[in-house]
Image (cartoon, rainbow, N blue to C red; front, side, top):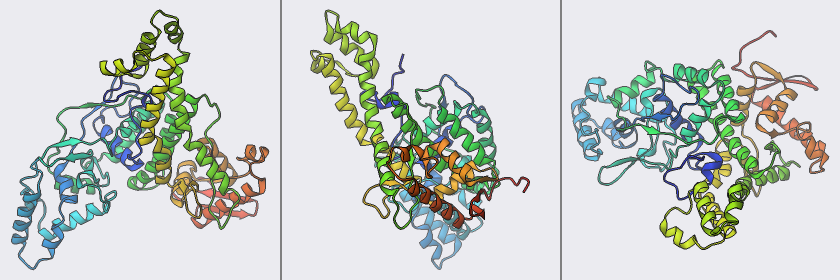
Length: 505
């Protein structure tokens, strides 16, 4: 029995991927929302398969107002007036622009900072750490770096009348799905405890600064339910969980590790999106991502573009296959053979996809044959899919540095240095032979770079072996330049993780 999805006209995308993946919620926003869910479940973080995960996110209106709705603090700081006058002028101006949602009286800040200059410097410091601080997003949708539990809050829409509501544009529930995925991984509880230990230490300096500015935490009135996620287990959940554990084990500050975890989350969520699409479409072949390592001109460029386009088309195929699956349900044939086939098919469509949704829809569709009902829903589902979910592959692959249009007329897979560094930090404990690294990248993420990993493509005469071999050499050269590969000889190179543990040489 499929679980009913609330607030949707019909459920097709949701049955394939969960409620919900969303293109505008980029990986860093997904991880921020995830941390908000984790923050409400620190007593049993990522612990197994509960009936329903609930969480109560923070709003922190005072903190975000000080950081992102406070443009006059710098000009007041620079004025040649006394410290007392600076405080008085700033308090008056901030009160005029306040939301009246707990930020009317900011007098407590006088007891936190010894001078207005210190206060302004603290704002500058925290603001400089923010995600997309210079973007044109509204101030209530900008986020400080998650230095600790007091620096976490949800996306908000604040209307002209002073009302505030959670917005599902940038916190679209993808972070909730990420929480469920990691909680359903075999090593979920181990990861949960490490995340709480490393990221939820309220005594850390930057978290204490955020707490000093915010004052008492502001939470939503009631807890929310997350999900649902259609799979109790999935290999991609375990892969991502193990990847995060590996990153957290590296010899680097946790805030640096978090940057790599964000990229890794984006990569694994993208692969989950593509893998689920393949499964629903009946395609048993693993996801393949042929990457060009950018050089002056390579023979792999066209193949990488073809690989990108093939993966871009997967989700639409999955939508059609999901809706058409109703015809394979034994109840469909029973309905078709009944005395009222239109009504029987309509009831089954409603049970499987929550469509048609009401009596008005019934009047429009009640006399349609079953095949026409299926065609109508496919048309509607594809149209809705194209608006956001269908853009996930293009948007997320660019966001994590996997795709590019540089030196080309169309998008193709061409990883950035940042993504390559994350792959090394995630995969390599200390050092690993270069050939073994390429094999592991293919095994974990379907990424094809060299001729060994692309043997099938060579056999099918889609590319020659020399082109992939040159592509492999280009990667080695890139990694040497990044200080991540050490050449011992022409035929022996090692990929080295500068943050890995040091074993025997």
